[in-house]
Image (tube, rainbow, N blue to C red):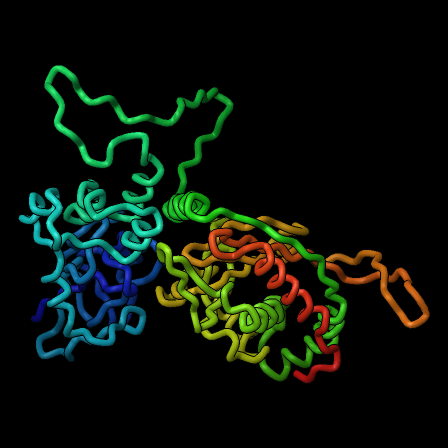
Length: 431
């Protein structure tokens, strides 16, 4: 018999730990090759961890709800003697598996806690933590003074966001005080009076992450929102005419979302500064157009899968990608790299019957666009014979943008260009 360690997989470049949500197997259960053993969660996405071998689970090393560093053993699987060499499952495959040992060695050891507390230069900070620190002008000394709640004292996203929220209310580095003068307690949130006619609902893990991200975004970027009204009649008539033949030819439903994404990608090529992020005093203009689309999950939470290089896909390719990502988002089957790398986000508030919204920027991007419900309305049309009133399919577009680098001229021109592309949609366009 051979004993194989099931390790916590690396779920993305910036992911250094994951939380065990649920064990699907218990000690004594048999597991097949690539069969899911447990569900895990990171700051980015939930995922299954498949078994790299066929055998019997003999030991589970961490309980549910425990946060574990990547490449750390989380279970032991006993296999038949002489069985095939373990292979990485597609869901957690890595390009260079042999790098696991050096990565594990690079983690701070359990005996290095004192060095970390004193600001050792080797203290590890994830790229996400460093990005937030840069955006908030947090010095290295402040970072070193933060007490982390992650594995082996590492500073997590939650730690640094809490520090940002309380910054200025209390000193970043504790200073010695006389024994007779104890430090003042940290400010706490106002007490909330709860009567008997109140239902208390605890936030789930994803809702807490969304809440932290939204607060961080509003704190980071001065938001400005612009609106335009779009005549969607050409798009609606074209879609109604070709949707059955499109389904027959490509095996995919054609929704409005891929049409919106196509128009946004074209407008980004016209105004590339919208496709950027801020790094201190530098503007990083992204060459790749990776458009995230907010997707609602059965729990009511939102997740943003990303369509990479959207400007290189035709409508059929966009429709297939949109449908695939949306379907797997609803069933929590997205891979970590499918929710990373976005450069611009689109959200459809019209799905809920809303005519417009003021979305919050998905950091570190600098703009997010919302599409409202398409409704029939009377509108004035200019014709050769004069102005007439006609029934048209109208929709509001709204876009929130980071006023640090996107001024009203750029933001307003960009959203107007998206509207122009939608209004000029060719009703005779071939599929």
